[in-house]
Every structure is written in structure tokens, then in C-alpha cells.
Length: 148
Image 1 (cartoon, one colour):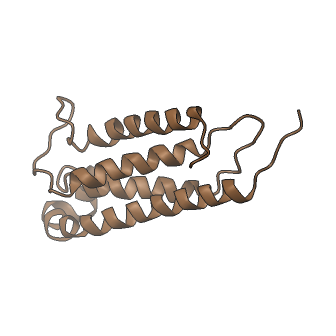
Image 2 (spheres, helix red, strand yellow):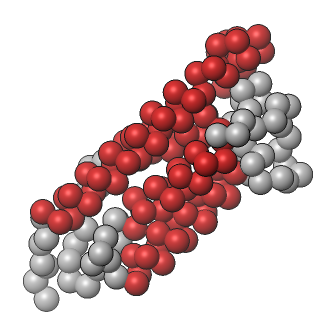
């Protein structure tokens, strides 16, 4: 990342800002009139939210083409998307999530899903970090110049 261009850093910053809004509004970590939250966020929801957004922004920046170099194929896309989705489930309200309510009901959401949320947070951040690491290693190892 030391050799990133200004364009890559701007993409990382923009991607982080978008991820903060896209994750924070439905999870009501950003107070808004569109969504409500029945249960207050846990103390760890905020750091997980910010870390997820930062990792997502950095991962997005690895897909930016720089000069004459092509960015390598997007192989770790599943890890990045999976990590973001897991982190979103982790920071969301357990009884406000319709998918969770359909799967396990309201009592299951509180008794089974809520205690599982920290595990989802760690798994999501781990997947995002692994995807970013893979992308950065691939960019470093496979520098390919395209003919002009």
C-alpha cells in the first residue's frame, strides 16, 4: 500500500465512507428515520462497523487500475462480500432482522442469534482481512504491464 496512487487512496476513502453509510443506516448505528432498532447496539458494534468499513474501502481500492497496470482478476471477491455480510449481521439488531426472525423466531433471535453475533463479527473481519491480504499479495507478485 506504500506505493498506492492518489486515486487508490481516494477510492479507499470513498469506499469507506459509503460502507459506513450502507452498513450504519440499516443497523441504526447512524440514527435515522428510515429504520428503528428494538435493542440498543452492543459496545463492540461500533468498532466492528468502522473496521468493516475501512477494510471494505481498502479492498475496493485494490481493484483500481493504476497507469498502465491492470488490476489482477477479482479472485477474493467472495471472501470480501462474505465478510461484509457477516459483519452486517453481527452489528444489526437481532430481533429487527427479518431473515433471522423467519429462521429462528423472536426468542431464537435473542437466545441463539444474539450470543452468536460476536463470532460473526470476528469471522466477518477475518474474511475481509484475508481478502485484502490476498489482493495485496497478488498485486505485489503479479505486476503486469499492458502494451501501449
